[in-house]
Image 1 (cartoon, one colour):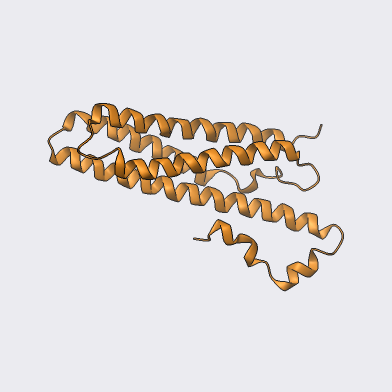
Image 2 (spheres, helix red, strand yellow):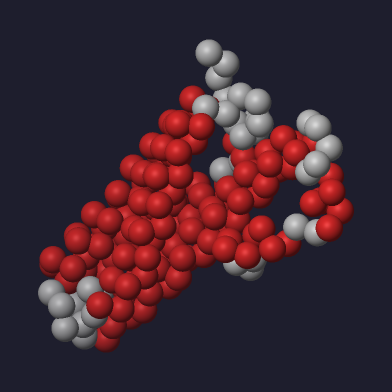
Length: 172
């Protein structure tokens, strides 16, 4: 997996020269935005997959502790995570034309990036919560709904991101 923070480092000498050609720079920036969008979404999906695995471990702990009344709740969380992973991985790269150089509304793009920050923060919270909230010592009656609340927030933020991106490709 490519580290999103190292994406700029992958640019070669030829690309540096091509960026100086009028018109070509816009094309490269458009492609970089698309590639960066893809890398960020794959990173997010990987984190969500790790959360899903953690919920699976928690389910096994509940089963071992004979707390089977909460297994369905855990499965609901796993299903919602799985659905979100599919949505994130399945979103079209760059949302086809959305990141075109000429038509991008920079203020709207900033809003998309703000939503991306929320998505990353929530995913990081979930990863931490798998090991801190979803533990046998905590009451599943409160831990599972708290975890699910954050999963649902990720769904809402991803919806918001999609709504914003639909507005990026329109000429005004």
